[in-house]
Amino acid sequence: MKHFLALLFFLCNLTTSFGQKHDNIWLFGHNVQTPHPDYGGSTLDFNTEPPTSYKEEREMNFNVTGASICDSTGNLQFYTNGAWIANYLGEQMENGDSLNPGTITSNNYYGGLKVAQSHIVLPMPDNPGKYYLFHERIDYHDVLILAVNPTYFTVVDMNQNNGLGRVEEKNVAIFNDTTKTFGTITAVKHANGRDWWVLFPEKAENNFYRCLLTPNGVADLLIQSLSPSYPNINSNGFICFSPDGSRLARFEIQHGLYIYDFDRCTGLLSDNPLFLPIPETELGGGVAFSPNGRFVYMASSTFILQADTWASDIASTIDTVAVYDGFTAPFSTTFFAMQPGPDGRIYITTNNETKILHYINQPNKAGDSCEVVQHGIVLPTNNRFTSPHFPNYRLGPLDGSPCDTLGFDNNPIAKYRYDQDSTDYLQVEFTDLSYYEPVEWSWSFGDGTVSQDTSPVHTFPQGGSYEVCLTVSNQYSSDTYCRTLQLGTSASGEVQPAVNLTVFPNPAREATNFILSDYLPHNATLYLHTATGQLVHQQRINYGWNLVSLEGIAPGLYFYEVRDEGRVLKTGKLVKVE
Image 1 (cartoon, rainbow, N blue to C red):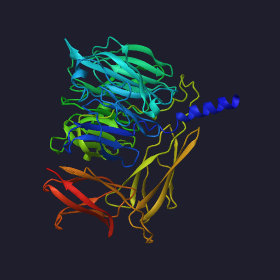
Image 2: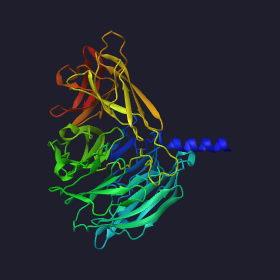
Image 3: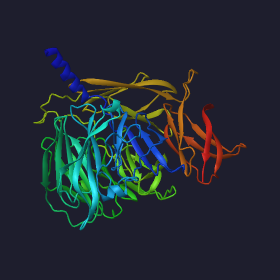
Image 4: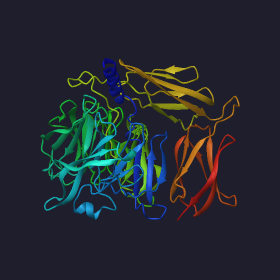
């Protein structure tokens, strides 16, 4: 029995330090039953680096509201648009109908609900395969026009129906008097590293409803009323926790940003939060922290702001890091909701129905160095305002806190991504994506050199193949992650591996993506020809995502070729549609 208990403790501890890829699949798509090529389901898949996108046939539409969950290894489990729940095959889950019963849901059952951050999915602690969906029922209100009453949870057990899942409990009221909440649900891991705090802010008020998800279900209900009182603002906002859960940012459109301290032990927010007035934000947008928690980003339609939360005077650090460049596809692609990705980037949707996503490539860096890439990603189909909504699933216990009582340790997991310099193909910047509190980093670049920097920039001696390994450590353990980098053509003339180059969407309208994975080119070039051999477009292709504008190119069939220093990387067909 003693050996069995020790093994059980080890396995429970392991679940907090391995995997946690619950946010690896992002779903988009509107008018999915329409045969037009601009409509259908789109998926952004972070199980690869760079992430890949593809079109999917599915029944569910997303219209602002959307929530999903993967298992800890990145396999999609289920998703919802606020009206019903689908399993990973896209079929309605058993008992997955009639979510959020009410007039608005009935009127939008086909298209999906229309409130951002109103649904979020959490794995149930110590119950593998069981999940809690926290959600809000939006309906008409005599005074407020739209409001929520009540807030709910729904329980999904993916162990049922041979892994297709079943809704075990549905529309269970948590708070019956929250008639003024409106979206902006968020959640963060309890300091014990197992349970979850779930927060529901009250619309236009400095009040928060709160509950705790434990292995026994939902408990510890509390309404926290804070000062100062909010001014009478008629706006909606977005909300997010910092990656370590110590701060909560609430961006109230037309007003400004509130930053609260948060106690992961007690689940309480600080009174008198820091307020940063943000003018000219009437069209509003999302909010997100950088992966290291230092910078907070705010989107306001035509610009993106950055503030340094580690500064003594945060307000003085507010900096405009992007201004909308006027790109249309065919509607304006101004900035809207933000969601951090598992690859260390922050992704931004648009204020219109478009295929476009923007992203912040290096959000841990100050000012323009954060690299806001506008219209950097073209989805295969149109997206209508929808942004995924995930908490930080890779947060462990708060070591040394009074409630770190369950024996879980932050056993670090090593992970990184890399970006190639556009002017020197041998220079590569590595971005650390490790989690569970590493304190030491050791890099081996495969060329005889090493580094102890967190996210180093390294110049390789020549083209070729290199195995780059990162080892991260803390007081509990260490972990190593290795990837093989192929930089251009090998100087030794060795046989070159096949290159992974994907083109989507195809057919395409305003633009498409050429995404180059697992190969860092020397000087790759795209050539686009007509069927008669006339060159209509030529551009440099770098590692990762490459936006290829099709503006000025007539509809029709074209042939592409991508070459690097004489080597043909890929050839194929591209269809431009009207």
